[in-house]
Image (cartoon, rainbow, N blue to C red; front, side, top):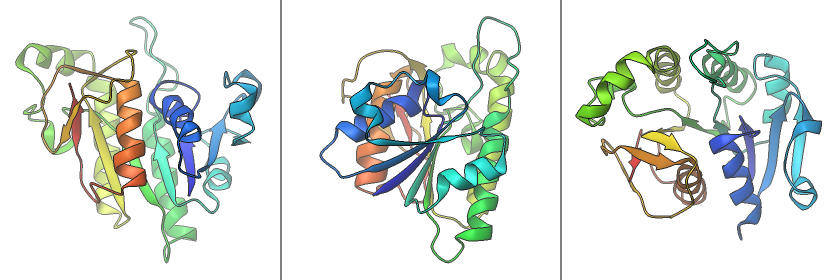
Length: 220
């Protein structure tokens, strides 16, 4: 199975790549990276990865990354540090909209499945029914800007007519892989580790093809 990953250099996207190439499934993984030399995968892992040098803001770079893929994982997001506004805020919107355009233009007859990492509290869940009460002020204030971009992307994916799964994690942590989480439509919870989100995407969304054209939430 050929999987293209946008956002593979860190966080959930990176964990997905690590778990995919270590799994028993025969994956062909292609990732897009601005600085391939700075990737922190091991030499053994790099032997199993095809790296396309480029930028998720550049449509041509994304097109090269998507060539021949069966699934595209969009795990893009701004790199937030402190309280300052990151320079790449909105990258998930620009990059994923490029993905939709490319597939419509080049793969309309045989489109790959799009798996997007979003968040609880986004889309039709913006009423916060999948967000615990004590976290709602945080979502409303600190996550307002990134959620605005994710909402645009979710809407565009759903209206595209392309096969998709939108995964909505609770607040992400750098915790261990537990394989013990809850995932379904409308699941409400406080946190979940990026490694467990990556495991859910790999095993349930990619390998088993569960949750087609759906938006499951995931949390502990």
